[in-house]
Length: 462
Ligand code: NAP
Image 1 (spheres, rainbow, N blue to C red):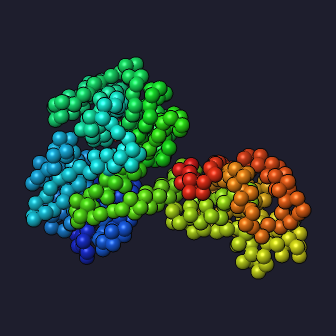
Image 2 (image 1 turned 90 degrees about the vertical axis):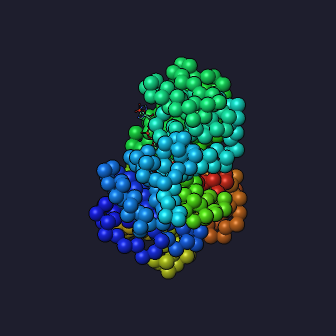
Image 3 (image 1 turned 90 degrees about the horizontal axis):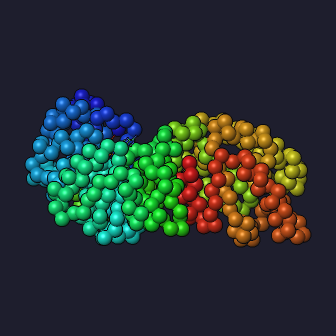
C-alpha cells in the first residue's frame, strides 16, 4: 500500500504496522519483502509505504511515534531524520545515515541496517577483507556504508569515481570516524593491480541502461565483485568476472538482509538461513516478472527444449517463485482432448497432434493473465508457433546437456517419438536435428546440468 502524506495522517492501523518513508516513492520492493519476512516469522503485522516530502519529515515522524511500531527511511530522509531522533546507534552516527527507526519506551532510536545487509552478503560468500585491497566505485550513500564496513574489517580501501573531490570527501569522512583506517583516493589508472575485491556503489549498469559499467576490465587478481545493483540481477560489471576465478554477487541479498535486520531490531525476529534463502529466491522471482514486463514487454515465460530437458519440473518451480500460474502444454492438451499423448499419436497422427499444439499455444498465449508455459519438445518446430509465442511470451531454451537428458528420459514411459528399436541413437539423432532450431527460436538460453541451478539461472537470465 502506497499512501500520500495526507492519507497517512488519516490512516488508522488495525494491527501492528511498519512503514517506509521516502520522497519520491515509485515502485518499491520493501512492502513485499517485509510481508514475506513477517510471514516467515509468523508475525501478524503490516507494512506500508508513505510519500513524505522533506519539509514534512518531522510531522511524519511525530505521527509515526503514535501510529507505527517502527519505520524505514530512504532518500532523501536518511540524514535529515537524525536530529529528530532521541538516540542513534554508533555505525549509523558514524555514517550520518539512518534507514531504520525503532520506538522503544517512548524513544525513537536510529540504526543503519544497510551495513548489516552488506556485511552478511560478504559473510555468505566467505569473503574475508582483512589486509585485502578493496576498490570502491562511487562515493554516495551506499559507498559510504560499504566502505565503512570494509575499513572496520581491516581492508585497505581505494575509492574512485568521476569526481575526485567527492571521493576525497568520503575518504576524509571515513578516516575521521575510523582514525586507524587505511583509505586512499585513486584515479582509474592508479587502481592497484593486486585489488582483491571490487565494489560497485554507482547506478552504472542499472535497468534500463544495463550496458553501462563503471569499469571496463577487472584488476587481474580480483577474487570477488559485489554490485549493489539488483535490477538486473547480473550486471555488466559482474559479467566481466571470469567465473573460475572471481565470485560475484548482486545487491538483492543485501536488500533482503537489511530488511530482515530491521525486523530483528523492531521485534527481535530471528530468521534461519533457509528462510532468508527462500525469501531471496522469491524476490528473484518477483524481479523476473518485473523485468518480463518492463524490459521485454511480455507477460508469459515460455520454456522450450528437448524432451527430458526438465521443462515441467523447472517450469513448476519458476511458477512458484514468480507467483505466476503454471501450465504444461502436453498436460493441457490431454485435459482438453480427454486423451493421453501416446493415444493421440496412436489413434490419430503426429500432424494431428501438432495442429492441436498450434491451436492451444495460440489460445494460452492470448490470455491476459501471465503464466509460465512449458512446451512439448516439438512445439517450436513450427515457425508459426514461435511467432505466436513471441507476441506475448519470452521464449527461454533449457539447453540441458545430452547426458542429463538421457538420464531424465530413462525414467519415462510416455514418449511416443522414442518408441523405436534403437532408442539412444534415435534420441541423439532427434536431439542433434532439433538443437539448432531451438537455439534459433529462443530469446534466451539457460544451460546447466543441475536442476536447482537451472531454476535460479532461468530467473536471473530474464
Ligand atoms: P547516491 O548516494 O546517489 O550515490 C551514487 C554514486 O554513483 C555517486 O558516487 C555518484 O557520483 C555515482 N554516479 C552516479 N551516476 C554516475 C555516472 N553516470 N557515472 C559515474 N558515477 C555516477 O546513490 P546510492 O544510494 O549510494 O546508490 C548507489 C547504487 O547502490 C544504486 O544503484 C542503488 O540502487 C544501489 N543500492 C543498493 C542497495 C541494496 O540494498 N542492494 C542499497 C542502497 C543502494 P556523482 O556524485 O559524481 O554523481
